[in-house]
Picture (spheres, helix red, strand yellow):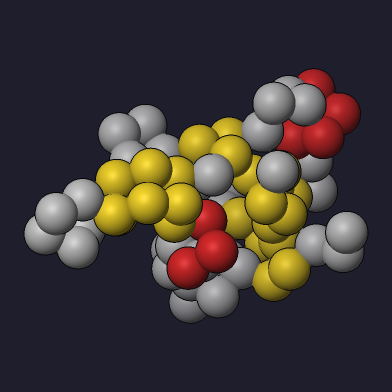
Length: 75
């Protein structure tokens, strides 16, 4: 599967379930590539949590920071 670009927010496809109030409750794990070239596929094959407590940050600064997500793939 090809990597998708980070659009600066949590992708809808990464929300697996919602609670009774409609808020995201269960999140997928993702493989990410950062702007500095780091790829979780090599050292962290289980990926990162895409949301929730301890989930990744999807924001992108005007001038992207090397540790921000450039691309992702839902696992």
